[in-house]
Length: 112
Image (tube, rainbow, N blue to C red; front, side, top):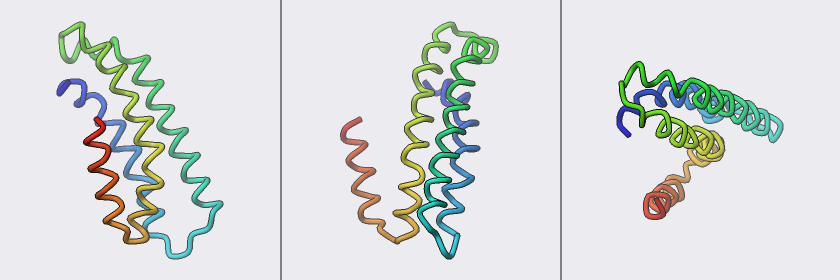
C-alpha cells in the first residue's frame, strides 16, 4: 500500500493545490465560481483516475510486484473521492468552520 501511495500522491498533489486553494483566497466568491471550481476539479480528478487505471500495469516496473496493479487501481478511487470533497472542504476553511471540519475528519476515520 505504501508503494501504491508513492505512485498516487503525484496526481493528488496536482489536483489539491489548484482550484480549492484559490476558493479560500478569493475575496468575493459567487455560486458560478464555486460550480466552475467543482466541475474543473472533478474533470481533473477523473482524468487522473483514468490515467491511473491505464498506467497501473507500468507500476510493476517501479515496484517490481504484480500485486501493485490492482492496488493502484483500487486506491485511485481515493482521487475521485478527494475531488468531490475538496471544494466543500475549501469552503468550510474559507468560512473558518474548523470545528465542523474536525468532526467530519474524525467521522471519516471512524467509518474507514
